[in-house]
Image 1 (cartoon, helix red, strand yellow):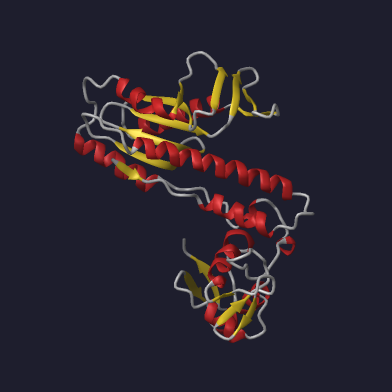
Image 2: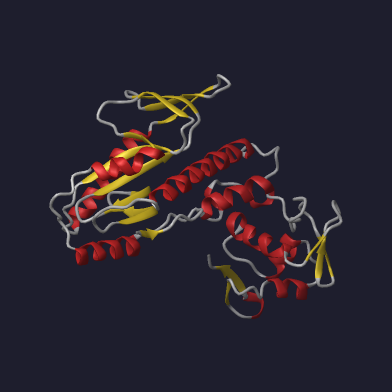
Length: 315
């Protein structure tokens, strides 16, 4: 049973917005673009694995969680967690195409793309081992005694894993259900009621790391971010406000709701709060009443009065 379904993270959405709005001449543009591409590839892989796990049938009760953030010695975020009365399984998901070698001392994952280009990133193995340890410590504190297993999972068959450390479980997506069914489940450790309590406790303890707004997170001057309403048709940033509409000077299309996405972009990448003056500046507006209408969005929380009025967004 899916206790926490797949959902695209706000961080991934914010990286897309930042890459669109950060000037290409900015010294951090290439880093942001690469992080955006890596983050989105990872989330595509996680979605594929979650879809596979939705097909999983077991003779006992179980729960699956996507993207669980907990705190033990430090904050740690598991891509996918499965809990049952007998065990827990942590899956560290990777979406990498090409020939892969995972080495130790130092712990690195080196992959060769089909075009021959070679790249290296941190090995997922010590990361997974740390997650297993931290979750075990957290379970121990709350007197939960089920064993915890871990596996590095490559989302697509285009990954050819050539070399891996011993004692590390490496899986492709189509091997997942067989792997989980093979785990010993002879004598339950938790009752059905206790399992439900663990599920609810995990959902309650889940606390996703807040990296927003990204300009603050990555130490980027907000003045380096391109302002203006983005055209939903051609992507041009700088639509003009006309009566009851927005018009794009690039493709000449109209949109009534283009400002809604721009408002979300503001909070994802620019600043945590907005007032009428800041709204006029970011949306390129002259009329404060136009800004007031934008700030009447039901997802905004108002605080303060008169000139001190400001708004924050709920996600």
